[in-house]
Image (cartoon, rainbow, N blue to C red):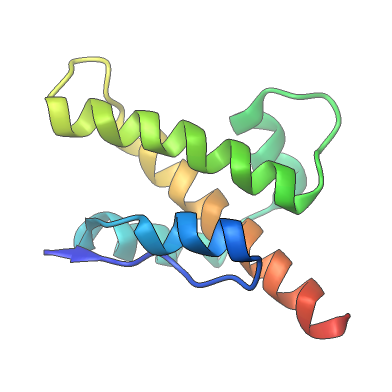
Length: 106
């Protein structure tokens, strides 16, 4: 069974996120971890950047990396990392929440 990730308010990113279908267990684990998401700590580590990008740019990059990770999962590749995949989904959820919050205050 697959579950949708989130629904942010940015149209292109909204479409990208709406198209994501991941196993429900992955989504549940990521939702649990999203409660402890720390943008400064987690995003720097995942994107390997010294300066944090804006949430829109970060989310686009995260979706691209997560899509690659999901392709490894589906192919059964030995290089697939479950923990890395969950970390990416946590960050995707965290950045989507930031965008939604920013859109609500705008």
